[in-house]
Image 1 (cartoon, rainbow, N blue to C red):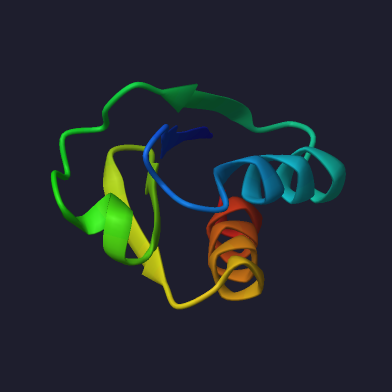
Image 2 (cartoon, one colour):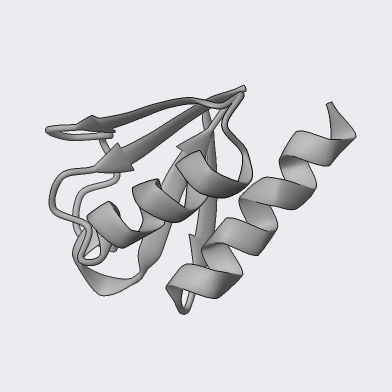
Length: 72
């Protein structure tokens, strides 16, 4: 599963570290831009296989991505 984080997303390092620890099989990358202008600076956000996943905090985003990974 591909997960892309925006470089402008606050908390991206913490999100990436948690995802690497909890779901090491992910294809995880931090990109300069994921074409969701504005959203990245306002909320925790990721592209998961091309679909936008938004959360209020790091824990919620990691949980939502983990749920998506279990479905695959």
